[in-house]
Image (cartoon, rainbow, N blue to C red; front, side, top):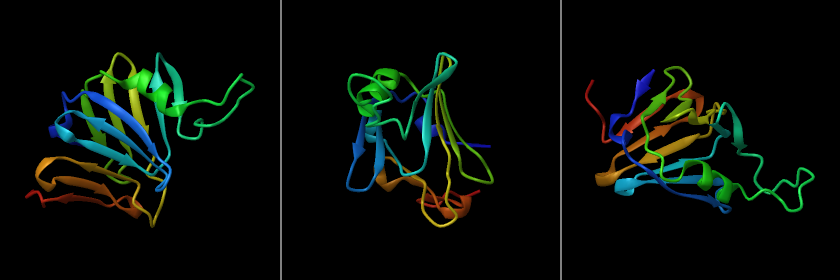
Length: 140
């Protein structure tokens, strides 16, 4: 598993849903943005606290689930302990500690599942098929 060290310690500041692109945007300190087009879920207190498909669902409740508000309640103010990327699939696990995780399942052989953007044009992109690309190119 690969880890993105420059995200460690950054705090989740905002969460939004972009209805035009069907992407979820997780905003962190230092202008770091994590755009997710793949399935995801938040693990909280030992269970699934929210899944990407829960947004807008009624589930027999008085009103539909507001995924943006619930995700914000679960993650806002939490600092990233690790941003782990699976070698074969480019699935992601953001570990916020205390049993809080954001898990992303890179589910397509053709579409990009997520993009992590930082300052100075820094980007990490999970391409279809699980290939991972970093900009600017990182020497290995």
